[in-house]
Image 1 (cartoon, rainbow, N blue to C red):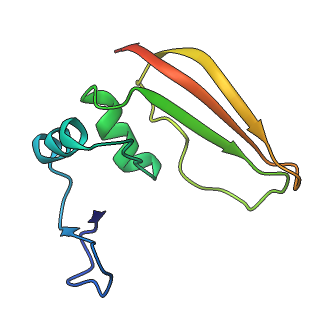
Image 2 (cartoon, rainbow, N blue to C red):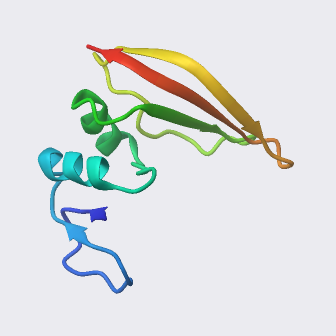
Length: 104
């Protein structure tokens, strides 16, 4: 699923375009998925976190700076995160995993 307010069509197999994030529809997708569902981007992820649809947060840390951008978590969102593991790669990047508890 690609969520975009600017795209009008996609030329990608097995891909669905949603013009806006529908949390009820996303909740159904997450519940019915046979495996993990990944949500990328801080704007979509913040909405899914607030709706209680996320059970694990993965943070990728890269060994180079690329400039500004959106914050990882939006202001006012507080999460109870528990360390769940990490992976380190040959290029120096690290992925940190945290299980999500309650949010407010």
